[in-house]
Image (cartoon, rainbow, N blue to C red):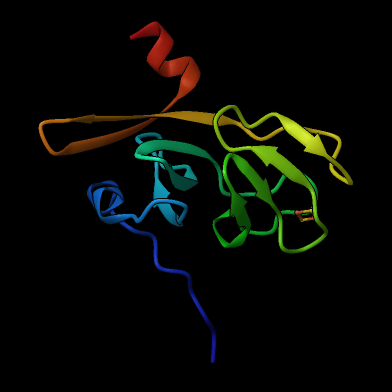
Length: 113
Ligand code: FES
């Protein structure tokens, strides 16, 4: 039986417990791994830049995300690569919460807006 990961609505990010991750979607349709780090929400592209594993299944320790496939590490706040085998960082997104509404946008798009 095929297994499909549930893509949570951005609004469900508000139910995310501290230190946990979930799979959601940005305004441009990208799948993103969203984290609650001490009440602050951060998101990076869900596709690991190494070989494409889902980063929403990664291990999160404070702001360090460790891919469960081969151990590449990223800073969930910026997408910066912290450790290989990947050679690239992951795209980061802004997570805006206002009046109970959650919006997840690519950082470049929000900078222009
Ligand atoms: S796919 Fe993530 S480290 Fe290899």
